[in-house]
Length: 132
Image 1 (cartoon, one colour):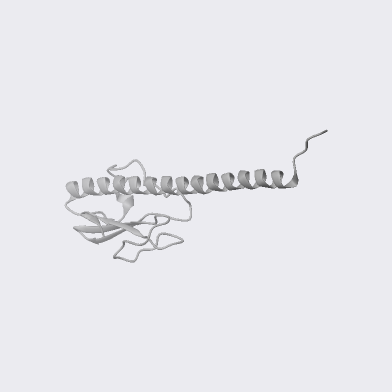
Image 2 (tube, helix red, strand yellow):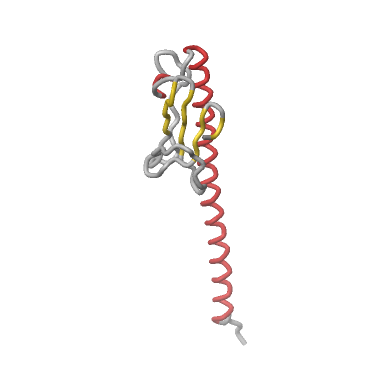
């Protein structure tokens, strides 16, 4: 007598494989999102360091981030967001204060200042003394 798999057994195996594939896909998407957010936070810290070096030499913050790469080089280049639909926003508030805004995926806003970061509002803002 030949043994064959029943339709129910095949459906159970296919369902288990589909569930495992969906769990892996969701985990992969979440890891990508966290990786992009970590890069954004590292970029903002790099910009903050360059801004503090600029202020140390000039007794004020620059009017734009382009001042950090020319004529004196505080950074080799201004970092860009890992997703092309977003960008980093810098706003000089005074000679002694500024805000840098970025859009972090999957978090609620912590910004006290409204800044546009491309296709979304910035939801993570930093100044010379920490979050704003």
